[in-house]
Amino acid sequence: MPRKFGEIAFTPEVQAAQSERGSRQTYERYIANGPAGDTITPQIAEFIARLDGFYLGTVSSNGYPYIQFRGGTPGFLKVLDEKTLGFADFSGNVQYITVGNLSGEAKAFMFLMDYRHRQRIKVWGKAEYIEGDSALIEQVRVPNYKAEIERVILFHVEAVSENCPQHIPIRYGVAEVEAMIAPLEARIQDLEQQLGKALSNG
Image (cartoon, rainbow, N blue to C red; front, side, top):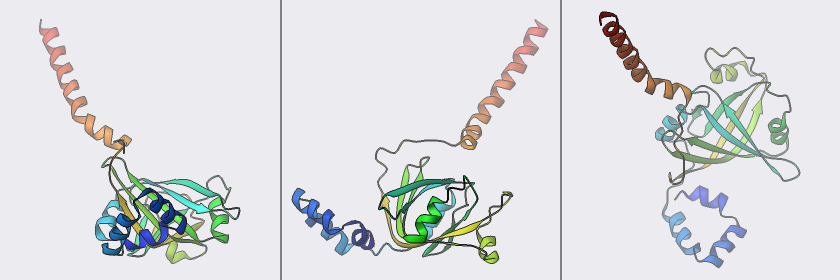
């Protein structure tokens, strides 16, 4: 189990709950013997490259968490280096809740889900938004998507934790389903043509 994950997630209150319920010593051993787990490894980068969406959590000034889904074509979430993720931020519904939250509190969280392969990765860190940096905007630009980029959101990684696949439902995207049924549709079309010829010759 990654050390940095434990340092962030296992607050004094969490540790007290673990002690009361008998799991504290087990997690202490896991954390003591585990890797740092504070970088984007090549394997995690490969995982991120195939995502078409993720959940971003920020914290408001009144202490409430705010979770937002961000979606795009695979590759829209960029691995800029082993400690930094970035993505383009468009106008959307112009509520600017994420931008406002990050203005007051940089702590943030990413929940990355790959339903197709039943994998999930949690990422803790600090986020910031940057406006007017044309070079950075080009780094996160999504090919063939013409909407204007208002800003770039950078996520500075502090801890990463991979979870087990238990209870994750398998879900397929439209493109994946279309690719799977394409041979079946072709076969049906071929059989219909054969049947049509047989009936016309009958």
